[in-house]
Image (cartoon, rainbow, N blue to C red; front, top):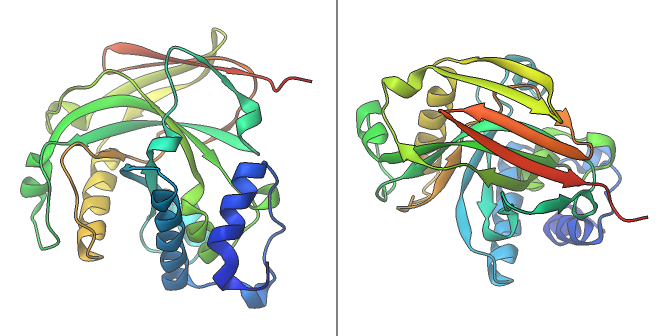
Length: 255
């Protein structure tokens, strides 16, 4: 890799080879605007290679994460068809480099939105359905060591997502959502997701539209992690949320 301009190709090679890149020297670290520009170039490469854009994810939602990078808002990345994970098959951990599991809400758009200004109610009326979701975040920077621009260039660590059954979205009812996560029957976390996921949803829709990115019916938006990301080990992960159980099974790479 000879410079920042080569990052999209280098990150895509790292993902496909399963070999993380060494963190950038401070002098080569792109800023926020360049990070998003490189992210768009990486997405263009994915689409040119046959992947389809499926939606968007929120990242760096927490105050501590934002403070680390001097942010006053979250960031986002893109979801593509190659990142869709099956709910009825075992998923080999060998397809990832250093994966972490997040539990989220997935919202699906009922209709498209052209770039422009919308109030909260207009944006919420564009949401058709909601579902429980797992996201697999996987950093292509060794040891999860990166600056803000490198994280954005790496598509905000988007690597995989698994969706439960969708149900009709109700902004009032889904403002409060409880969840319970287990691995092989042992509890990993439980709690109540208040208004923050919906706030992240509104932020992301508005931010994408402000950036000139049109949204399309059927696209999915992941809300950001409801629980701190977990290192993934082989086992059966079960998420109880929205009156259903979403199960995803990970298996260790073959020796």
